[in-house]
Length: 534
Image 1 (tube, rainbow, N blue to C red):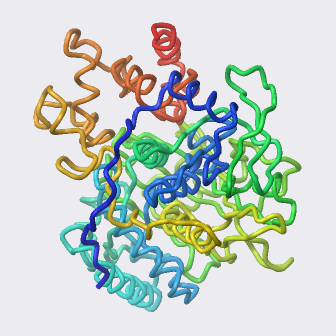
Image 2 (tube, one colour; image 1 turned 120 degrees about the vertical axis):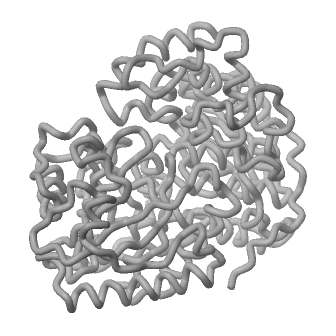
């Protein structure tokens, strides 16, 4: 069993608040010639973890991102911290173990406030015969042993079991009755929000001294730093940031700064429908993809915001350029709707879709005839001739380990004095009350039992900090509009403490209202108003 007992971590002496004033001051010092030990390029989940890992080892750190935090792939995930069952189907036990181990760290230490157990059903019906069902159950039970070895208790993630058709219909009322013999019920971890996880990691890094600088574009990387430009309020003028070590953590865009890196991006598309269409399900449902041999599934997973997330495609992306928000094609949408509808009592149509998004995974290129669905999700640390490190591959669940490996490479270099990695036992900002770095005990205001549940779900121990902004005007905690589950207090908190600089930051990354265009449009005026009041 892997031990997650906490060792003594360095005290976070700095503030975890990110805002425009802090950004301007830190950017000025860097442009004036201050040298940092590590420059991290890329503000997604990998870059944020690298910044935190390096900062907690005693290294001075600057992270730059050409857009906002979680501006690219890291906000377009399936919102799951999964244990790697898919990798068992490919007999990749090492990657499955790494996934189970890192899931345990996320659930029990890093971000228990953002991650919760989610039940999944695999219907045993006309699409899964008795032999296929037995094979799937065997694989899930192997994954369950890894769950136990990784230190995640059955109270957090129960073991797999077979359930009768009646219980399956209770959990997913829209499940198809066609030849339904029952279902396999297993559990995995669901993220409240991927972008908020990135933010929690970045703010924890800031509390340990890292400079987190959004809207700073890297134009060229060098062994001693980078030439960059301020894209927010610096007019785009170029200047240099000096660093002793440079890490390229820009994901699918890595090749733009490191031409020797060869990637094969894979596109994962998702759809959102209203939960009422599926009878307000209490569990996710998985549908085997025809011809996959039981190694690939489409899924429909309920969310806490009244929506169900449907995913996921896994197709090569061959566009001439790599956008921050890849389009969801008609073919993607048709594939997902048809795949999930095979196990439902009703056929979902494009008219049922209220939101759609896609992300690109930075997979290492394989052979010419190798499908992206078969490419390994393992990560790699590649060193260029100039000494710049580039981190590619991997996935959101294992990003902490990717960061550890990258900073280990730096720590091995001559003249570098760094502590061992501490992030495996370090709670993030917002983690449960009483954890190191938690602000809950220090903030005067309502108790957790008196706070709106959505606020606690999104902010954890920081919910009281958000609520405190509405002490003089409780109306600030009211939803911005019907069917818009975000308050003005949250917008203000995002600007004052979470580094939001634009309306897009507020709508698309801090609150995720942009996942549903109708919700985004209803909240746009409030977002602009909140920025105007700063």
